[in-house]
Image 1 (cartoon, rainbow, N blue to C red):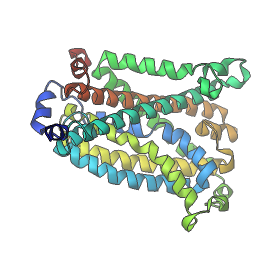
Image 2: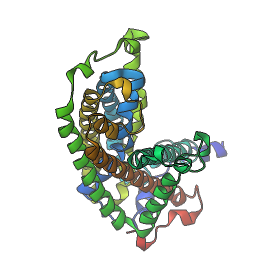
Image 3: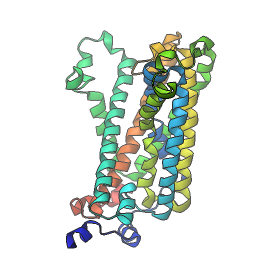
Image 4: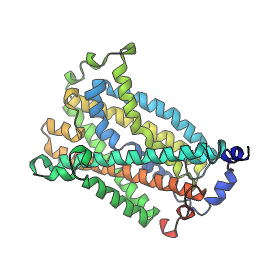
Length: 356
């Protein structure tokens, strides 16, 4: 019984707030917005609308994005409530420790989050390589593709993905101020690129590309909506980034008000941009041709706008960069929480002054 009580021993909010007291409260509204949008509107908006439209939903992929946003919004409300009540580092891991117990439940929560961030980082980094390959037109360069894919994909090493992660690691080592500045600037550029895609793309929409809006080949299964639901399940992966805001609660100037609102705002902004992007993309190119790794650039190339395709390709890479940066930033705070609580070596729970 002693071991059982120890396993489910709950941590106190006071214990966490005292342990996180050395973290400087420097993140404000614009930083939170940049982190949220930087994470959520990354590879998901530049790749998923095309692949999900081609393989699961057709032009109705826009509905899938709305459904995924609603589901994410419900989850976001829960995160908002916890972030307001428990303004500490560690996101769901710390919440689980206070509510359920430190060793059993929160251990699995913490490692699940770490694996989630690592998986997302890997997937997003590969997306970066795909856009780079499209931008450089590597199909015309002999042997170049061998360094754009890992061994499981017929290559040797995905070098751009590795370099991307090393660059982001360097930014993280320099400190929080640099990370904030880079994220804020690059997210602003990304939003400008998305605006260009949506506004300019409107002029190249062909209404017949939206007919039928929900193709018959995807209307199998219960209620004939299986394709839309399959796309929704894949798209939900794109919305996971809103929880990264909760990982930084201890460093927010006014966490009880700012974090909760910014989580909800992030989901709403992402839903609007994803939906508009999907409508424009499937209007420019028939959904059957969109199963490519760089649909945004492909769409403008398809309509004969190669110059804009290059601009969109560069913007997409910037957008993916911000997503990886925000994910690595959040995972560093999560791992710090493990060290803070003694679940990893104590030195991992210490942050040097240079990080701020």
